Length: 223
Image (cartoon, rainbow, N blue to C red; front, top):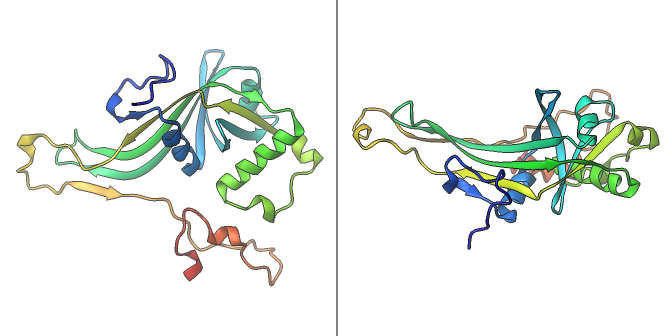
């Protein structure tokens, strides 16, 4: 049985056959993404800001400077909309109208809560750090008291979340199939390149294990 929508406002309206409300699908997309775009309205003015994030169970944790406007507004309980999109390919049809993209996306609606408990805040920052690069937290110095004070962490529940996915070839009109025009999909993927060390890195320090285990790079160890 299909998972029902989380709420009326969380229901996908446009092309609902592409929607999924299954937690496993939603979590997989969030875990693969790197940047979330968070939108709020302040005094009638809309704002959309990119933010790094991490997931622990059924919650997302957002990270930013304590002095940032978005963090301060979110901490006041303003409703937010968070989106994450993975672009998998360009869908090239025989007509301009039917061009599209293969993608996986998640929309989360909810109200973020500031994290004040020191242990939870540390766990959240560890999750955010390791979300970008697995195992990175164990390789670096953890934040000190001053850095923790300057950092805002917010918890956003995944109670109102939906996924939307498009896969497959273009869908051309029957009368366009005879056109002398190439049609198909141009796949896309995010990959890392060779690491570039900091100019002030001490001699003899080798790239860490986390670089070779990057989810965006399969052939790094061969270089």
